[in-house]
Image 1 (tube, rainbow, N blue to C red):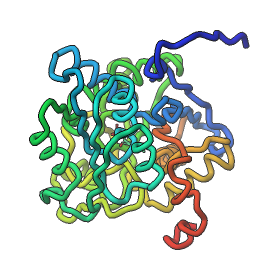
Image 2 (spheres, rainbow, N blue to C red):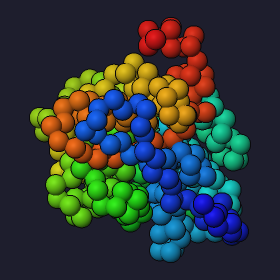
Image 3 (cartoon, rainbow, N blue to C red):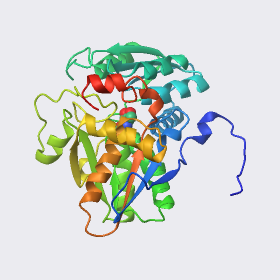
Length: 329
Ligand SMILES: Cc1ncc(COP(=O)(O)O)c(C=O)c1O
C-alpha cells in the first residue's frame, strides 16, 4: 500500500481518524464480526482528545476562554492528558483533579505536560467537597480567567463524537453496523456515536457494559438512582456514582454488568491474541462484544471502541502480582 506522508502543523492535527481494526482471533463465534476503533492511537493516548479539542475550540471561538487562561477539569486521567496536551500547545495553565485510584502512570503523564494535579479520595461521596468533581467546580469558581471543560454535563462532549467518531465508524464499516458497544463514564462516546449511527440506521443496537458498583445499570433498568453506588471497583474511567448529563439513556438498548476480573482478563487476551495493548475499559467492551456474540441467531457486525492503551496500566492489570492480590487471575 502506498503511504501518503505529510506534515502536520501540530500534534493536535492528527486527533481522530483512528483505525477500525477487525478482531479475529479473540472471537470464536462465526456469526459475529468484531470491529474495534483504536482510540488509543490519538496523540493524547485516548478517546478523550476528540471532545476536549472540540470543547476548547468552541470556548475559544465564543471568547469564554481567553489567552493565558487556566483550564480546569475533573478527570480519571485521560481527559486530563488531553487537557494538559492542548494547554501545553496553546499556552494555558492546566489544573486537574482526580480520584486516588487513578494509576501512578496516568498521574505522572499529566505532570509531564506541565499540569498541576490534585488527588482526591475515591471514597468521597458525590456530595462531599472532597469528591474530585466538586473540587474542580470550587477551583473553577475561585480561579480568575479559568474555564472548566465540564465533560460530564457539556453537550459539546457527545457532539464531538456525533461529528467525528460516529461518521468515521460509519464510513470505515461501510455502513454495516448491527451493534455498537461502549462502556461509559460521561457517556459522551456512546451517546454521540449511538445517536449518529441510529440516525443512519435505526436498527443499530447500542449496548453499554457497566462495572458492578456503578449506578448506570440500575438507573437504566429502573429509572431510579440506587443507594450506595460508590465506584469502588478497579476499572478506571467507566461507570459512575452520579448521573452525567452528557449521557443520553434514551440511545441505549441494553446495559450489561461487567466484573473487574472479566474486563481485565479480556483486556489481557487482547494483547496476547490480537497484539492490541489496551486498557481495562477496552477489555470490558470486548468482553461485552463476546457476550452479545454468544446470543446471535444471525450474522452481525459488532463495533466497539478501545478507549485507551495498556501502557497506562503496567502497575495494575498488566502486573501479575497486582492481578493475583486482587484475585483477578
Ligand atoms: C479509559 C476510559 N474508557 C472509557 C471512558 C468512557 O468514555 P466516555 O466518558 O465518553 O463515556 C473513559 C472516560 O473517562 C475512559 O477514561
